[in-house]
Amino acid sequence: MSAATTTKAKPRRSELADELLLGRPTGRRAAVDTLMRILVWLAAGLALAPLLWILVTVAVKGAPLTVASPPDWTQICVDTTSQTRATTSACGDFGGEPPQGYQWYWTPGGRYAAVGTEFNPYGSRTTMPTGDDIVIMAAEKDSGGWILLPSLQWWTEPLGSSVDFSPRGGALQAIYGSVVITLMCTVIAVPLAMLAAVFLVEYARGSRIGRAVSFCVDILTGIPSIVAALFIYALFVTILGGQRSAFATALALAMLMLPTVLRSTEEMLKLVPDSLREASYALGVPRWKTILSVVLPTARTGIITGIILGIARVMGETAPLLILVGYATNLYFDPLNGSMGSLPTMINAHRTTAPQFAGYDRVWGAAFTLILIVMLLNLLARGIARVSTLKEK
Image 1 (cartoon, helix red, strand yellow):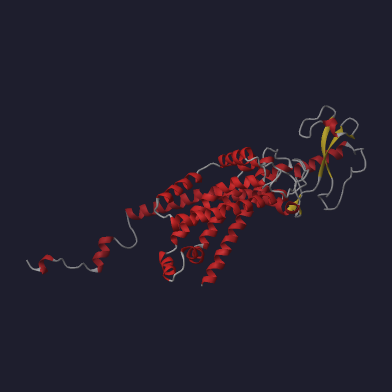
Image 2 (cartoon, helix red, strand yellow; image 1 turned 120 degrees about the horizontal axis):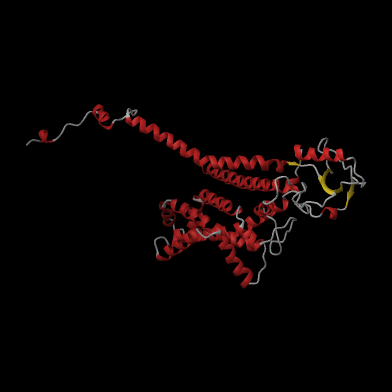
């Protein structure tokens, strides 16, 4: 049998196109294609809708506090029979119902909302005006709410002695505490994570000890934050005799940040081509210098991104802060002793406040500030990566 009879003729290009059904799908395939496209867009919308809803809600409710300050209001006790100002103790607790014959009233003080000037009509006298005037002032506050004035109070003043129903006070102590605790956590976790990643990739790749360390890192990744806090409390406070402080909190957060940075750094180091290492070794460069001069600079963009993700991972953690450091409403600069404020604990401290009080608004303000800081960190990471890419070009 000749080769001509055993070998089939090659099909022409038009025949291949007909056989593979190339081109725009028609009929049943077109319907399936359209249905799948709709399902993909629907899934994307369902995934993004909660995130966008959270961001918009937090921004709408929290942003006004970060750029404006409400007017001052003073809660005073009034004897409704004689229409005179009574002592605070006569009405009992601020949040409770006063006894018969007494009533809580809000009076404008400090900045007068209408004109933005200093105004305190009851600062120098105890006699109240007529009952109608009191009712009008209370109705204006309850119906109109606060008139926000442009201010940097949120960023420049600590909460101090302000209570839930007082509009005064900012979040400086919480912002400072969150930044300090996160910086200490980063200083502790990042070097350890990078050293461990270098060991796994450059020295223990494929070995038994490398697989054992990798397994331990996987376990550490799934540890709840409260377990990490209890471990540090037992070790640092109970056994070693340390104090509940910002430093102890940073140790617990470092345990949570370490596996995130380690895994991201490990993956970035694996992406570095072995040819770069081999070229360096061929020139007589030792391994440690190859790692510092070739491998880490090549992977620095991904490493920085992993560090930023690790910071975002720990900035919103609350359990270690509740267990290892007390919440403070004033600025404390000693991270080794005493309490320290932070944005997560500020949210926790005011989360049960009634919606009509200022403490309720501070919850949204603190949440927005926390999201804003994380967003700025991500923008910083992108800027660093962009600058590094431009320099390489």
